[in-house]
Image (spheres, rainbow, N blue to C red):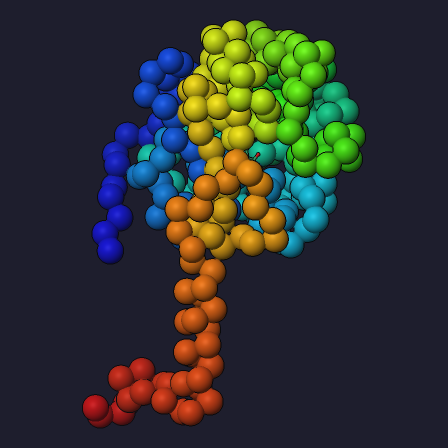
Amino acid sequence: MSVAIAAKPVTTRDLRARKGGEPIVCLTAYTAPMARLLDAEVDLLLVGDSLGMVVYGLPTTIGVTLDMMINHGAAVARAAKHACVVVDLPFGAYQESPEQAFRASARVMMETGCAAVKLEGGTEMAPTIRYLVERGIPVCAHIGLTPQAVHALGGFVSQGKTDAEAEKILADAVAVAEAGAFAVVVEGVQETLGRRITEAVAVPTIGIGASPACDGQVLVIDDVLGLFSDFKPKFVKRYAELAPAVVEAARAYAAEVKSRAFPAPEHCFGVKR
Ligand code: KIV
């Protein structure tokens, strides 16, 4: 298998300029090997706090720490040569004040080498987004179904079903875009709302369970590969089913270890074949 090498790194400015143009392709990545495989195929690699569930087996993203995000962010940023790397700020690291958000973002930027941070929240986070952007930190916003607010939202349920809810989410989108976010992730909303938001804001929308009209799409890589099977949201499309292949390989290895077929002479040092 060959991995394509693309030369020019994608910047947040490039992504911002894609509004209404060719859709932005985004996947999550949490490790260097996966980032290396995906790098040339996507515009944006998101080190999402979904790693709490996908990598660490946590029930939600609430238990993810800033140190976890920094460790995985640094691994992905080291591996990526082309895609724009964006790292999530985890729950509790930015909601208290713009100053707290700046300190967390500065650590993330300095210790990972990523291009931008992502944070969840709408109108209430707009002053924080403005504060960060004015101090040189590019911010991607995340509205709609915001997983860090899972307990407040009453579960992982789609948002914007009533007119009042839809108007609130639309106002959130406008507020974060006007505050300077270079893009807005729109998660788990009614399709018509995803479309309205995309028409209403001047920056790209990146949908996940939103609308094909969004300026880009993002999915969790383990969902795409069929590796994460705890649950499958409606908006997930699996492009591969790798879990059975992993189990099959582990089973074959176990059988060969037990039968002493592995290691064979070619896997041993100083043994003539
Ligand atoms: O944490 C994450 O992976 C995300 C995306 C799925 C949008 O926020």
